[in-house]
Length: 396
Image 1 (tube, rainbow, N blue to C red):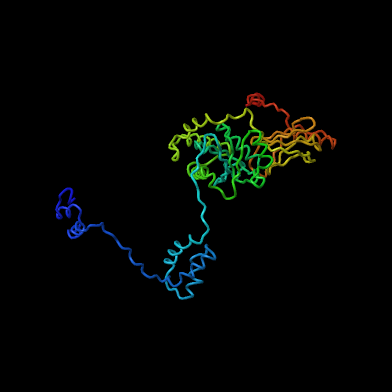
Image 2: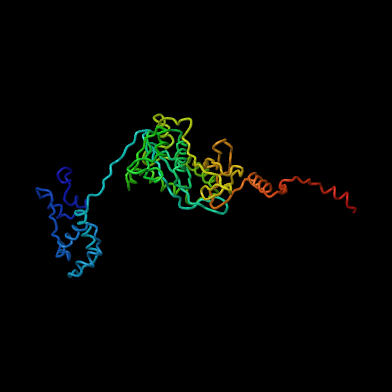
């Protein structure tokens, strides 16, 4: 300002607010100003510094309270905990093991889909005055951030596999690999899938990545989505039953996938349409996910599944039937003849008994035949006459 613009020291003082003596010293100086480091004032912790470092060398996680109350306070330290915490904040990283570092991850279109189980914070009404703990099997394509989810009520393989199939059907595509945690129904040990899960993946030609223990960051996209689902879908909603839950969930997902994602800066559905060009299409038939079990029909012809009892054809007592339980129905088929032993609607409430009226009629008939009497028909048709006929019979 002085040498280029020709301002006087007075004018420079007015424009900068600096004192004229400061401006004069600056103009007279041949070098830029320098600032010497202030001398460090002594601390009450200085006499105990070596001992604190020794304690941290033995146990880097030793708390400040322990160091203060059981070590240096007994030796005459009179200061407070705040200056000790400040010192530990500087010293502890020197003795602690190296912290884990993370790198930014990029994904190719259609490379993977991440799956995870998210426990709902509120139980879902399932009828008969009951509620039940539910889970969302969530899936996300990390490239486009396309999100899908399915409601299930257990961590059995059949329920998880059904949730995966439903998510893949919602997407209509088949990525190259599946990324999952070490769920007990999916993980055999040593990073290997269980036999059932391996068969499921093999039928779809899907690769798999089972994460290491305590490695939630490897599927961080879904961890963030879970917080989004809790706050933007589950909170403040009420549900009549599982079907109502799934209906509201599907409509919410359609809306959520039309938002602009903060990381990609693109509308999720539009980005997914670009990704679909690089992803395989789903096969015509997905692997079966029914719970299957062979049982022998007991003398009291009921089978128990998911804490409920369902009636069986009493004529098949002693024979083997195969139970096939899906999310919609409980079906049993006699192995030798293929005869249907029962077909009930699947109920997610617990501790209930369901008896098919046809099975009850057969039981009554078999009991009457065994005891030698004729059962009273329960379905006898009774004529219902109009009231006018009685008016004609009764004089006014």
